[in-house]
Amino acid sequence: MAGVLLCVLLPSDYLALTIDRLIGILSVLLQEEKTTAPELAERFEVSRRTINRDIEDLSKAGIPIQTMQGTGGGISIMDGYRMDRTILTSKDMQMILAGLRSLDSVSGSSYYGQLMEKIRAGSSELIAGQDSILIDLSSWYRESLAPKIETIQDAIGDRRLLRFRYYAPSGESERTVEPYYLVFRWSSWYLWGWCLKRKDFRLFKLNRMDKVRESDKAFACREAAVPDLSDEKIFPGGIKVKALFEADQKWRLVEEFGPSCFTETDDGRLLFAADYTDMENLISWILTFGDKAELLEPGEARAKLKATVEAMAENYRRK
Image: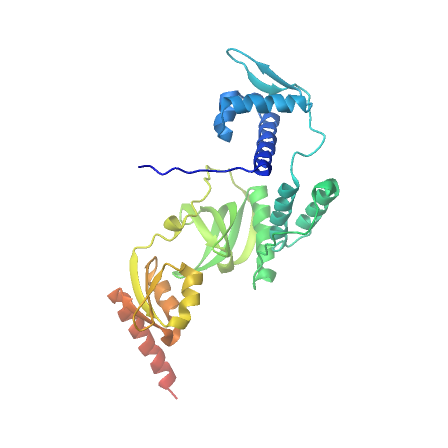
């Protein structure tokens, strides 16, 4: 028998949903020349009758909405009408400011700070109370990171090629890239662009980029889809890993892989199981645990790890 989901809305909840929907409908009407009740009903996941009632409420509030029946008809706002006040709510403004503050934390200029002051000055009645979300995107590398971000932003805006020296596990090389997106993911900053050397789109980690400079040469924008940043795409896995960790390393496993990545054994140790994407990174990661971890599988990685540990021990035996 299928389950039944019951949703109970209190009067205040219902009112909040209605107001949000009315603001949403008004936003659509201000941005689009014309729409229809069925389109709005599908967009906001309500009935057509509810949309008709919402349109009536907006009209009563003084919004000059006109409706036309038949072929080519629809719902629109009278030509020449403009909203003289923002349709954003106080919560909307708080979220916008939180986003701007996060970008300001890695900015090499005063642009975002000035932009926040403009928003505050023009919407003081919507910004009340203390901030509830604080986001700091800076890191230990802020002094070197901010200039890179500013240079990359300029190159993207100017549509000019970007040149830099890149340090990768396979070695270092000079790269020339058509820059398209600055990406913050996995606690790090990346550049997404078309690499002229590889003839393909690539993701470059900013901390591995040096001597970043905008060239004088412009480029014609190609079709640049937003990068697929899913873990499955960037970290495809393929290496089945099993390892035993001491119980006092639970916090690290939870932090890095989540609480479902291990099971507790009878002796209190943690049996870890996960997919890994790169053999060298796997060995490096296990080594950070010192004698608190034992890699069980795959056998190839275990053998490489053993050889690495023996070579390290030999280094310390030398006088």
